[in-house]
Image (cartoon, rainbow, N blue to C red):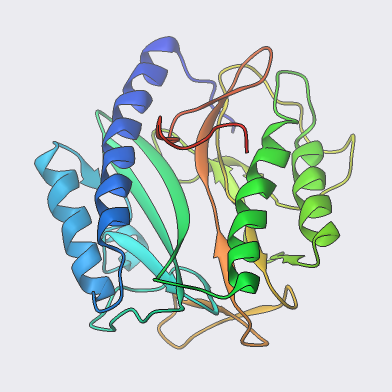
Amino acid sequence: MIIIKSQEALSKMRASARILKDTFRLLEENVKAGITTEELDRLAYEYITRSGGRPSFLNYNGYPASICASVDEEVVHGIPSKRRLEGGQIVGIDIGVFFEGFHTDAARTFAVGKISPEKQKLIDVTRQCFFEGLAAVKEGARLGDVGYRIQRYAENNGFSVVRDLVGHGIGVSMHEDPNVPNFGTLGHGIRLKEGMTLAIEPMINAGSYHVKWLGDGWTVVTCDGKPSAHYENTVVVTKEGAEILTLRREEKADG
């Protein structure tokens, strides 16, 4: 069942998103060679809880950490550990915040020091995939239009779209209806309605779209070992477009 959010609910989601955005600001300042993903997780946990929120991911279906930290060929759900980041890597960080009864969710992929032009292009295209999909979001549009635009932009730039994982609705629950694929067909899928809240999250691979799960039951990696990037925001469907709840003011919103 798709839940349309009231103005009161959206106000609470904006408050949740403010904590999430500030958490990303803190982590971005600390993503550098030598830091462990476990240390990044601790920083996120301390900031979110100090702000009155709760990490959405911690203990969610048994997940053992507050953030997901996915390095290079890890697509999503990388579990923070004592592994130290190294220059030349990319790391996708996914954060969820629960505050005043509502969740918000976002992800960014960061460069660790100087990275190759190929990895930078992957990060840039993945981010732009989100904005390509966002351009299709408005009341009355079809969900397939969003996925179609994401897929077209990724593939036109020589990359592939992960098929085994999708975005989702979000609100009182971390994962709500509907599923939000990053691929699709124009004119297909449910119609978007004002007040729907969606986590749109392109997961884009440098090589094949095929992925597999590691033995920890969480970490998803590319089958060919090539890098992957992740970019996500929580958005609200409006009559004329979308409001991005989790985009920081200093981040360009035009894609």
